[in-house]
Length: 244
Image (cartoon, rainbow, N blue to C red):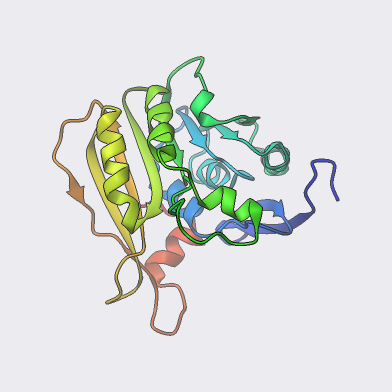
């Protein structure tokens, strides 16, 4: 057991480009934070806020792809904050910071250029699993998504972007929350598990104060029929290519 209260499991992200420690048991990072980082249109010198940053996977991947980007992760679990800080230090990403707290109460000292999140999006009324940490990470109370989007939007500069990676079924709720928080120019990027299979996951991105029509982006097929990643998915997940 480490001093942060979590047994650590070391691994890598982006095909070995990023060293990554996460909790050995409980909720583990999947594809979502890597895809979210790839879809964030950050440039060197810009500042990125992540809500529910966990052990830091999304910001770590973003920092590996965009040298010079600065990031702040806000995470309720203080143990995960400690893991994220250790991950940033292990990779030499001194411009990434992490703090403990809920995003709903976060107040930015200065506006951010981008805000990102893989929010708790499972229906709060559904059957709950035995893994408490996983349930906290994935399942939100009614209204939580709107509260997250409102807090993230409030931390953005005008024309800053807000990006969410969510289940396809949550897209209408997320779009409504964005509209209520002044986020427009929506871009929807779907991910298909395999060709010919309905998308289960999507990234929804909008612009603070944006007024352009919604765009349905081409999307990405993740797996071949035999289960291997497609070349396009490999480029994003292993090689650090940007999405869109």
